[in-house]
Image 1 (cartoon, rainbow, N blue to C red):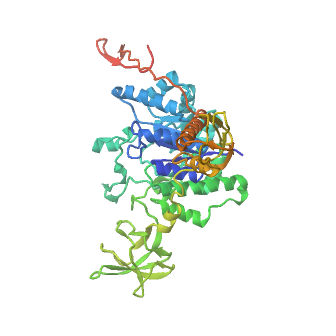
Image 2: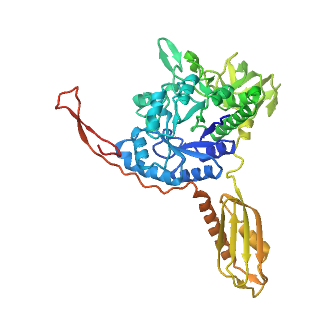
Length: 532
């Protein structure tokens, strides 16, 4: 059975590490420029690190270059694309047709994915981009599963779809609301999310334009069976724990379905975790038909968390809320009322006037709350401290085990051999001196060779072969180690690094006569990357 790629968002270094540690096959992220999530970008220095870190862990790295590009930005865009090509990005996601043409004409080594912001929603659009050399298309989120199947059956291009996360009120990439009311365009990376605000339309009041979040976990088997190539999780603005939890669950669901489709189900704990991490209410989107009004989350545009209980009473003088809870609660958890968003972090709580650190389900708990809550109001758990703690990054860097062998013989250059099991380097140094006093010990050599610092390696085995009466200065050992490690790093990365030329920008203005206008009416046409 076809196994889809699990593609995770990475709006920070920590989120990228979390995605990879929890089973992502690929990650997508943007840089400081030309990305549709300006507030979730890696720095220029972090980009190459992110690509290398992903590849070292056998994970693909896709970079978003998916804003619309203005003419004055073309020179900068060309330099940026050359940098990404040289750094070894597995693909770039683009929206701008001019940038797509530039890439295919002048940087054919760098694969192109068509961003969902192109709003590709039918076979004609897919086939057009396939002819232009696009490797993968992220389909519009408004398509049904039947429509996706038909598209997949009529093309050889890779198909990617969103399976979890926030939805846009407008057709993907077509919303101009933010630019119209705030002069900040989503197609330029600065969406202010006006769809999450309150509105009054024909007497109806609420968050009328705010969609629920997509969650296709219970139907993941249908998507696997359809042959979709990549399952994409939305969330470059989300925190690393969110990325870790969602990736971990979908990784498990995919593997379990492939192993035993007939016994597939989503457990209660998995359902709880997905709701608790973030939800505005969940929807299956358009996969199984038009959801109509059920697509919307009109009461609350932020995280609804999970149901906790009901307010029994509120002590106005002492500012205490008495809540009948139906699930455990702990110090450090976050709670809030449904709809109004009144909430707090639980710093203290009491049962029968006794302070407690945690509570069982089905208890009446007294909690300090400065903002007034009302009897029978629904209370939600919006933050689960223990869950978030369990999803924290366990290790900043996954280390690559290496074996080291050091040889020092009289009359021969000292030599250090390092291998990671796939690549091997041999670095030679100076001819060792004959010891006049105490000889250098094997333990001293091993201690120096172990000092790998912030490199990606950790020593698994170190062998030392010394002649008698050998002396080697510690400084020479350190130089030998550093040089050998750098060579091994270069050897590992050469499989994905490229040597790409900077694209040349060609402007060729041409007057074009519009047949519908008098011949005196002409317009200037700028064509990028090609002469007419």
